[in-house]
Image: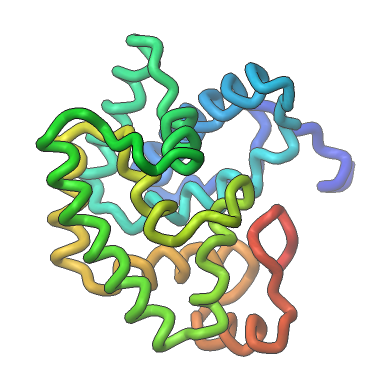
Length: 216
């Protein structure tokens, strides 16, 4: 049976990275997020196809890979608590993108988001200056809402997280000015690119496409 004949199920996702325990933790996180996305889209009357999980995994794995391991663990805890309390963090993310005036009410969370977003934007600018073609693809990380500003998108990634997790993300971004670069470095590796330099050449030549499940 060829790869194209494989039916993707939760027990049969051969593209999943499994090199270490951290990979397993990120997979558990992405699987929880996927379930929330499925619930959200089903409620909207736009159910997701299971075949879309691979592209979703590539994007979400790349996003989470820039976090330190303790931060990743705390975010998984946020997702588990949300699941048990009836919150859908992906719905909250997209809800914010549709109405950016709706920040979380918790002042501690709002303050942390206010500190993190400028640092993320600085990291994005640093990356875009070094890799302008790849930098222009930033909104491709969210094919659902490719019309929102980068600031709104970055904030949407933070609004559902707990203050404890946000404190750790703030630490991670402060310690790593190349936070956004690290995300892209992992992202392009899913498509056989072993360096950002090579991926930049392809992107500049318009041989790379935004992440919608396409091959770069």
